[in-house]
Length: 143
Length: 311
Image 1 (tube, rainbow over the protein chains, first blue to last red):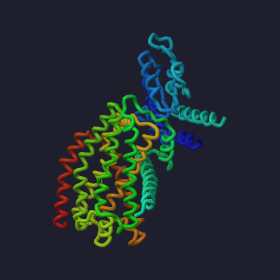
Image 2: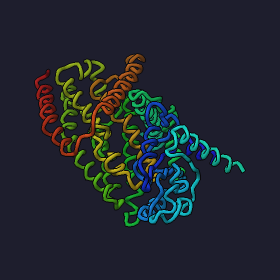
Image 3: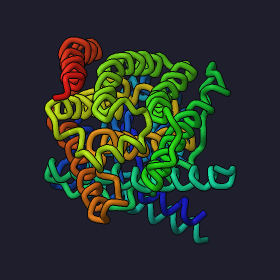
Image 4: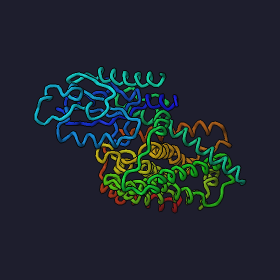
């Protein structure tokens, strides 16, 4: 069991789910793949299919149209799979909270395992968020 | 050969192919990272990836053919294991292989591709069937020149279709590659190998950025892990096949130096695959077919004719 968890923490395949973002967070995610940060060092990869995902990065405030689709996509992910809210919009809807086309915050729809705040968050903050998620999962396992 | 010995060869072939294939996959990713001025993944990354996939949930999509969807990865893995076992036997005892194993290997080499086609069509996903149909066209594109260039070593070594005899003949009379027809055939075989491994520029079937993993889109967990393992094992099996056919450098009975030489050539071939992958853009499937049938096949025919003339 511990071997499997170790393997999971060393090889996180990330599916990037854009739920009506302004694209700012999405550009910062791509920064993680560049030589300066290079998260492939830790085995983290972006994948194209939700079936390959170990973590789902959700960006954006999730409006009325994105809401249904997000629920459908997240339900298709193989377990164990973690949801990470990236950016202020995904964490709290920020200034769009009272807008006519906002229904729910992300954590009212699905269980969110990590929040990474910022508008947009820096790549360092994202790496720190992922590390915090890994450590929280490992700590939960030891209990 | 007894049943126990056979099982031993199968197990040995599987382990060797899996270990070398995982190394090849890591090497590919590491060199890619270095080309892009990144650090790249650690050495055991493929092991982590594979173990992680074993622990994940396997989802069979609604509307998919359950049996075919789940058994397709096994076909590919089984075929690759058998090829690897045959090669192990050929390399250890070149004189004791059966007649026609060359033809068996050529047949078995197409089965991983057929497994991808079956699995993708069984998964009831439009993008997957697009990937599957592209895989089918890719198979038809490269198979013709590949079969033609495999004829060259057969002609050069006096018409034998035994891999062991091909190795022994080259040990006695020099490599096939040390002739004009051999050089042309080897270059074409390298191009066909790139397509067989579905690497850029011939990765239209799994085009990550276009059809999101194509044939593999619906696969998860163990099934995806087996497909990945098959892919990695192919990165050991196909270069070794070319080395046996054209260079014959795996003949370690002659001198132990040959083994070192073989490892260096293998790494050189891997480096070639990776550098081509990193310096080219993906071709469309019609461009691939045109490339193989119009540009490559005439050269393959030329190589066969030159081989007949003894050049």
